[in-house]
Amino acid sequence: MSAATESPAVVEARFIAAVIKDGEGDRWRECKNLSSDAFTNSNHGKVWRTIAEAETYEAAATARSVLPYFSNETVGADYIKDRDAIWIGWLTKEGIAFAPQWLATLPGPATKAQLVARLDARRFNHAAPPVEPAPRFSIAGRSVCTPGNLTNIIAQAKAGKTAVIAAAIAAVICAEQGDTSRDTLGITATAPGAKRVLHFDTEQSPFDHDQLVRRALRRSGATDFPLWLDSYGLAGFSASELRASLILKMKQAKAQGGLFAVIIDGTADLVNDVNDPKECNAFVAELHALAIEHDCPILNVVHENPGQDGGKIRGHLGSQLERKAESNLRLKKTDEITVIFSEKMRKAPILEIDGPRIRWSDEAGMHVSCETVGKTRDDAKREALRDRAESLFHEAKKDSLTWKEFTQETTERTLREMLNYGVVQKMFGGTYKLAK
Image (tube, helix red, strand yellow):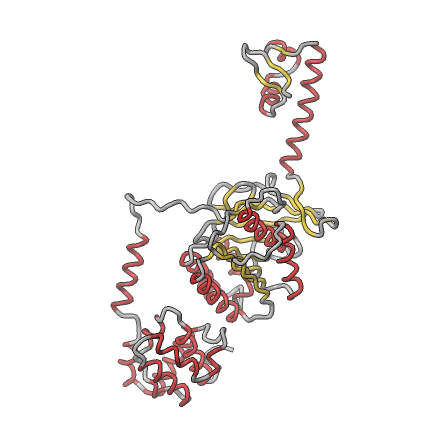
């Protein structure tokens, strides 16, 4: 239900809740001069008077206890929409005489000064290059996830994306423990230090969400649950509730040492319509701003268009996420084998032939790694070259051969391939021997 069709009392209550819950006090300062007499609900007018007359935001927050309605964590999520609805309502009720008071609440010189400061902070400075961010996650040895950026994990249903999320969490645990022996499906991470990992699962049942976390722990070999991991199963939450929860938990994590990464398994659930450009553009911009503000990557798990195999994410939301993302990781499943790769990255791509490959293992009770196509082909090539080299040395009845002796029996190209694959080695004096 939109603000236009909701009762004025509901909009007023939600608006006041947002102002009360604003941890920085910016909303309180913005609205402090609005008249409490214009509220349609007298109780709301009393609450607003308490807020407006308070000398500090902290004192204004005591209004929380006046009406228990405001204690709900998700109330007040759509602040901008509710503020606009209230302003329009007040102008309608008070008439044009209210316009000067309304205009006084709009962003003024102070906000412009803040904008100038933000612009100056982002201006290119040749004398002070920023420190290159260290990757939080890598795949196949290549950085795919750095602070202040978005990363998309794109897959058809049942392709193994939940396994990849669990492996990413396990990779962080392994990095903290200094354990490089575990199978984390080709994903590596840096240690989180004092920072937290926030994981939202918006798609699975409470049981399946629980199993995901337990598999991550089992994959990492951890015996204790990491205190820096905040994982929530939020299936059934509305889009506005999910967005409010995301902002709330990120703000809490900031006060607890900061964020290492945010993982949203089901990002499409945070919007009402994945095909609405206005809603989706604003949401992706907000998401990117949160990644920058909290100096962390945000990983979005999103679905491919059903029945397609080109990595196109659903709706306008998918198009906008793809444009803004640092990395677009694809999971492609063929004959029970899923390959993880990326053709659309800001840096060098991870080709499908080189991407990590995973499959379900009944024995392990989870997905496990299997060899990449590239490695399988390399092994076959190396084995064939080894057989050929051994045959040449056996026929010559020598331990070493000169270049001329080699090329009399095979081509220069084959000799170069034997050297590249480590099958033979060049010795001092120019002869060639079979590598051990």
